[in-house]
Image (cartoon, rainbow, N blue to C red; front, side, top):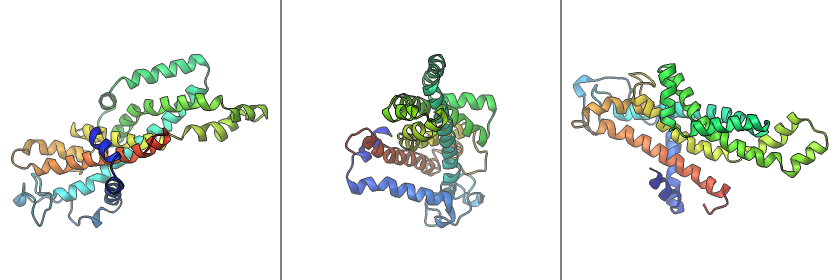
Length: 277
């Protein structure tokens, strides 16, 4: 997926619009799924189980006769909601911890920085899996687990930005004019350290979607019969030889979502770093 995302990110203007269009359709699936399919994602039809893609069921049906297209469309809400909630929580906590580290005395900054480094050495999915193993399965626990796994990424960036901003001329000038520490943090430090966060959060959302799907695949996310991409892959693995479509389409949904989010996030990242988009 990183290679494909890199190719799309460096492609021409026409091809580069494809990820944006796909994400727009995905947003529509999350907000108003009935506009994309009128089928009920939970309606079972055993007599029509494992039907291949056809005019009535474009993505075929699963082992219970449920419409795969409807489940993929409605599953976007579960998968993206978990990823988005986890990313927002990680951004908020990572920003606070990064600011705390960057503005704290040296001994506390070192303690927090080493904690970030230790957590960053663990793969995000493994760390999230450890958290869920402690807290138990469920959508809320999965959100917290993914957020905890992503917090160090944001905290390290905010900490580094805070060091730069706190020694800048305008902050020193504000101190000279007698502004309070809280006012300087709120008016000068915080707004100027958040520059890279939207870019990182866009890419991080894709990673959160992967982690969400992985945990759901292991049975720790939304429970059946909820339509969630990772859970759909878990159910489909026993029917790969007779119904490839049951696993193909949710797998494609995960892959395309992550690739498109990465492409959309990398373009502003290159601009932020002063490179050609």
